[in-house]
Image 1 (tube, rainbow, N blue to C red):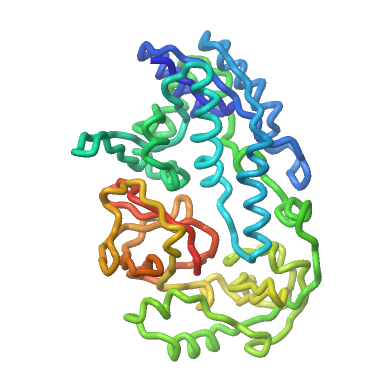
Image 2: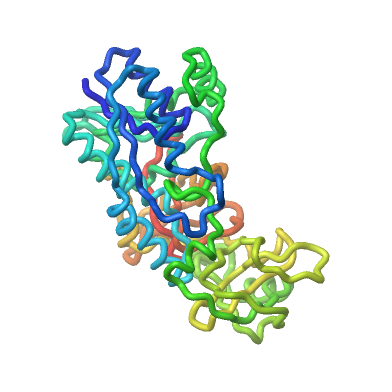
Length: 392
């Protein structure tokens, strides 16, 4: 089988290519350039030129053909433009999830097909299997064996068609095993640090990056006391009123006191600590809400401030995605699932309740930092079943 391996310059994709070649497949290494602009990027982090050179070195070491594809135009339109639009609305998108759905397993797959590849392989820490049903082959996306590196969450928006063309050769391995294989084979990136930051952009100063399209504007920073939140929340809903619990509390400036200013509410996300730049408190301040209409930032003192926690969330019907469409919930149905709302978060027990307007997720325990624009993903026995954009 001819397989195109997405060589990123990192050790994971390099070992994926090695294992596939050892299995007797016809391998071609492909490097994606998805971003040119360095505005807002922190110097020395994830420079694509370095990644490209190391990817070429890996291909030479493995004696496989190497191809370079520039997908920056599609990445800008389908990932970065979406990011700017979401931040402007006061939501916090996840570009890595979008990059996988829109670029790696869509545009990149088409480029691989053009070269005659039957499948595309990546260095993601997740597993794939399948079974036959009356309607054909059903693919199952499973968590990676390494609990510290499981990356299935980043693939939570993939479709059955995309999975049918994908391979994840290292999903059964632990990270130390991947490093060991790379060292034994003298791969040039065996000891290279893992990349961090926005997919294909790198680590960024987010406000500077966003100011490419979003203007800075001064607004008020208002502190909300934790006891105020407790009183209002208890009056608003009980633990069984999942619809009320799923709605974030709407603050007004009169609910707290102005303690400073900021450069734009759309530059902040719930749970953020950095960038508030206001002292005089015993504990750090954290963002608990923002209002982009009034350009008001609401903060609370301490990482356990009541305003940081929510018991439920809502996913609009238009934003629900089922990897396993055969398991899609029907209106009025309630099921128990394991859920995570961010990468590397331990799975949380929750009830999913499907209604005409969308999906409500009621957690057994309050969750810190439920953030509109991020993705909630739900699992059953280690299999990723579906996901959706957190609406509220």
